[in-house]
Amino acid sequence: MAELGFEFNENWQAWCLVCRKSLERPYRTNDALCTTCMNRYRSHEFFSPIAEAELASSFVTIIPEAKDIPEVLLQYGCRDLLLRSRGRLKEPRDALKELFQAKLHVPCGQPALFEMEHLARFSGLGGTWVLDMSPYTWSGTHKDLRSWAVLSQAIEHDVQHLALWTAGNAGLSLAKLVKRWNATVPPKKRKTVYCLVDASTPLDMRMELRGPYCRVTSISTGAGAILSREQLYNVVAAMAGERIEREGHWQVTDGWDGVGIFMYSLLAQQCLTFLRDELGKTGKASAKVYIILPLGTGNILFGFIRGMERLGAERAKIVAAVPYGDHMMRPFLPPPKEERKNGPRMSRAPSLAPKMTGFYSPLSPCLWHLTEEKGFENPSPVEIIEVDRAAQLEVAARVSGPDDTKIIDAEPSALIAFGALKELAQLIRTHGKEGDLHNSVALVVNSGRGIMNAEEKAFYETGILASR
Ligand SMILES: [Zn+2]
Image (tube, rainbow, N blue to C red):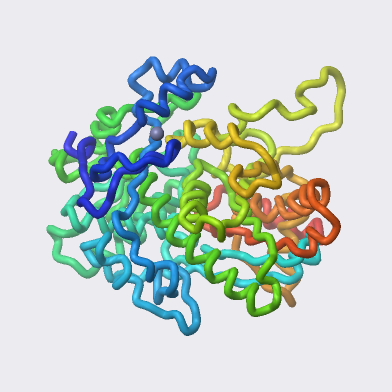
């Protein structure tokens, strides 16, 4: 399949996400396992059955890295797409034109960075800021930043058919962006999106995705069977009802994570640079910064890790919030204390975060790698905090009101990051010295609010009212 061997232009260099080495050649979407790194994790019980099979190629440890990242991306705000900063405004397309040669002039909306004082009072921390990605126009989530990059590449390479696996938001985002693009171009330049959803996806969510230039089909994967690209190509060809030239068809899921991670890494650098500026203005230049973000498949997390690595000494400590219960890190962490004991027990209730549960991520080997390094005091290792239903409900009421404070648009999965605030404060108390808590600032990444199932909608109708 043409798409399997698709190679980006030479501004996009392949770079291993685990061993942090450049492969010194352009990024390809069929880059999967870095051999050196694979040999390190193939003996782990989670990977060993898969490593023997061809499916090992589903795991991605390679991301693209811009050959020369323009310094301007860190120093200036942007009119669209990335953060805006007063007095530091710069056209983003000037900065990104080397990387995105299609120059996609479709607005995408813009994230915002602001302080939420009442969350600091709630958590006990010295300050609480939010990077809010809900203002993105198309899906109202972080997926729009990735979709913009994917569509830009598709335009540059004249690819008409874009297929992706989606839990909802990624498909919604790309479909709406493509619909807008199609409205302004001649028919032969129009693109079609094919959303592949799991058979358990409710009908109303599928209906919401379906529309002009967006076709939806569900695939029963049972207990998480991973289909090969060849199988998926056949599904997409059947949906199209016509012969699709393979050259004109991309699957923008596995292998394309790198593109999203790259975009988040730019945002992460910009975000921390601006936050340090703001803290400096209020005499908090020496504050320790903790970035709390939701961990689903790991795209935002690795974007931020990469961004922090580029910033070096200026970096912040990253805290990944996961839902209590099933989540992507579960195979790599020790079992919860409650599960180790036999007999009747009190237990914490799993939180509601359907977009963050599951055990397959193309980034799994990288997630496993994160558990190798530990230490709360050291900024390099990522701290994992599990957020249960009680913590999620408690913070939902704070984030969605009361009405005289700032209100955040966050779906239940996005609330998991906010739900980790109190636990973070507790960790700082336990590990730190007197005064550390006051000198700590949390930046919570809000992934936004996109398409929701009935249970997620009910969470807002019942959960929040009950806690007021
Ligand atoms: Zn490697």
